[in-house]
Amino acid sequence: MSRIVLLAILLAIIFISCSSSIPESEYSVSRFAFEFDNKTFYIISYTHHNKVGYNLLASNKEDTHFSARDLYQDGTIDLVVKGPYTLDEANLIYAEGLRQAKSNGNLQNREIKRKYKTEDLRYRYLVTTYLPIMGHPYNTFTVMERIPFAKSIIFKDEGADGSLDSILFGKGDLDACQKLYNDVLEKGLIEKFMEKSDTYYLVAL
Image (cartoon, rainbow, N blue to C red; front, side, top):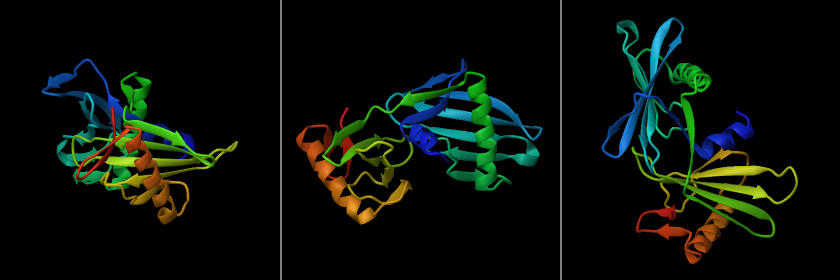
């Protein structure tokens, strides 16, 4: 996946928008039908007004009764719930569905609101907080060099607990960047751009 595409996905939520959107308490449900390999599939988006929803990929044909979830609306199927397809196959189907939805004007990107930007003499930093409908909050931490054609590294703090767990993009030293992350979180707290509870570090609205 290219750098530009990955950065775009991480900074926006991908969901289906159509006239059949139905309000359900604090979130809405939208459905998009598409054809793949002579079978009908559906992308169903559960979208919250200020949280990350999830997308469901499904087919109700008897020979392909199938469902899978994009848990964070980031354009990637994370889990096959049931059915005959592997995760890789589900992602191929999903990618085609998203392509058709975009072509039909039914695909929308919603900008993430919880973002904290800061910098020092060497790097620019971005902390982004995601609040899924399903699961716990998590943060991504982007480190970019302050030079032309700079390299970027994107880390994930899986539980928004202040500890970096994995690298989503680029190459870097997780332990070394943990110290940078600690410093950025503390600076954000001092500047009131970050909030800290007993469990989470979250970017403030």
